Image 1: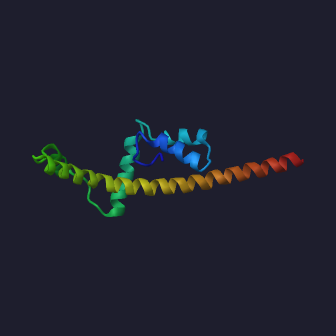
Image 2: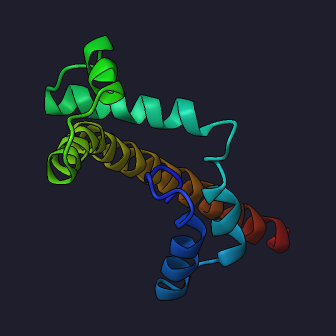
Image 3: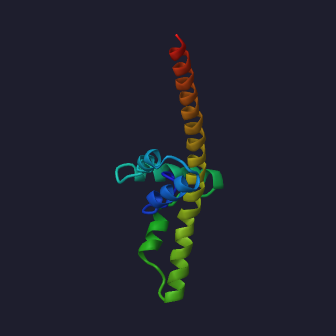
Length: 129
């Protein structure tokens, strides 16, 4: 959840998923706070760039920003304009976030599983001797 662009809902989602999966809430909550005001820009920018590369899109340039500063007039036209601009950012951001979160989640699972197995084996061998 830390790598999904659901700022403001991440804590609620972690609580929901830890409850559904019967996972440890005490472990889940601090991990979601990886994305905080100090880290959110580098994390989401990296995810956006990865998503853009995966989807094959172009980078947002000065023309995009210039167009944002001068939207068309008319309510419907302006809504469509902003919606299309939002999708230009949201699609690669979500794609990158899902890719990064999947990789980080898998690697974290393997690492924690290995450490727990090692710790348990060490505990069994230490109690016998």
